[in-house]
Length: 81
Image 1 (cartoon, one colour):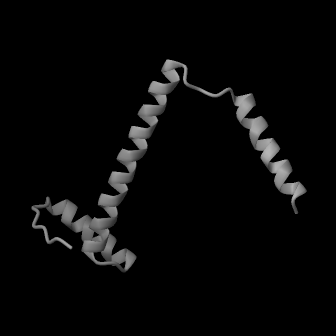
Image 2 (tube, helix red, strand yellow; image 1 turned 180 degrees about the vertical axis):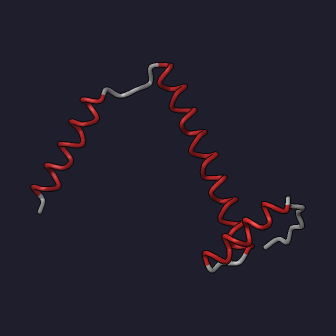
């Protein structure tokens, strides 16, 4: 674990403490969660951008093919009960 000293605006500090108190967590836990969520959002947006590039290149699967495959899987699962 790493300790970090940061300067926060007063309103940000107050918001962090309000969230910590409301959620029953420490400010450290709230900050760790916020950083993880920010990282996850960045990863998600990068994947969306990658998908857009692939779609623009024409690297897509026809919806009928996708749904047909899903229907076949579902029928197979139902038959296996």
